[in-house]
Image 1 (cartoon, rainbow, N blue to C red):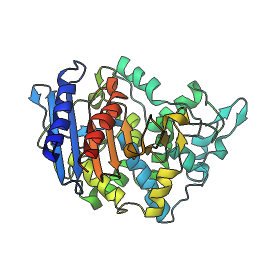
Image 2 (tube, rainbow, N blue to C red; image 1 turned 45 degrees about the vertical axis):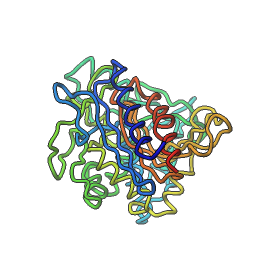
Image 3 (cartoon, rainbow, N blue to C red; image 1 turned 90 degrees about the vertical axis):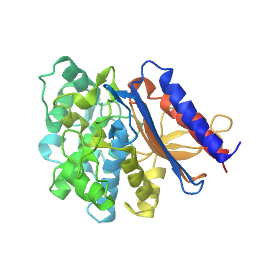
Length: 360
């Protein structure tokens, strides 16, 4: 089977997946590789009454975390912070007070920036409890700092910092506040000035926080979280914040990912640490590790052959943004529904990367 046939197979698999699943309203897929000389940018489904278009902006949920981690990496490269610094150095005392009290001992002052980045602080997740409250009470408004204060009063840390892995947006809220305190800018301004503007991501913006440099021709695609389009929830911005707020067409996400891989955002040494300073997500035998917002698939005999090794970022709405080194391919997309939070990765590995490998 030649390259074009394999590319058509990827497209057919994608469209069939969307058409046969009633949960999916719209979905988007971009595959790009200069090495393989291929480019695919497609959409399927509808946003409201409009047929899905490849140039629609998309909210890729927690894929936004890799932007936050990259800003932290930039600040590290510029000598503004160290990954091993204690977070108390950059956050207000009232925010730090009783932030992490576990089994009667206060570990707040021991948490490091790297522990926030790789989700090993032990802090409980404040996003989902407050998201559910916001869905049930559309009048609810809460700032990011108020959300953290609510977490201290109503939730309990899960373990001593640095001992385990627990995925939580709380860690990335704190990283966003650290970025604000170091740069003296609101997080969304730092996002634009440090990432979007230098890379000319002209249609990228922070959900409900900022505007793109160039208005999109098409509406933002609906992104369904537990049956609700969370991009349309009034007051959601402080819960999006530094954990998941980036919205852009997939072509802008591609600009970012290419720049990250080619060390045009952070240094090669910093990127290497972002990838390799990681903890297993679940059992190590599964071959999935989490670095500084970066998910890494590593070799596991039979379960995960070396040819599938790749790294990138994942969003709960079936969103993914990955680089596959063997084929030098970028795979970016979303099924825009939280029912696809694991199905999307299986699709990427089995239906996309598996066919890309056949082109080599």
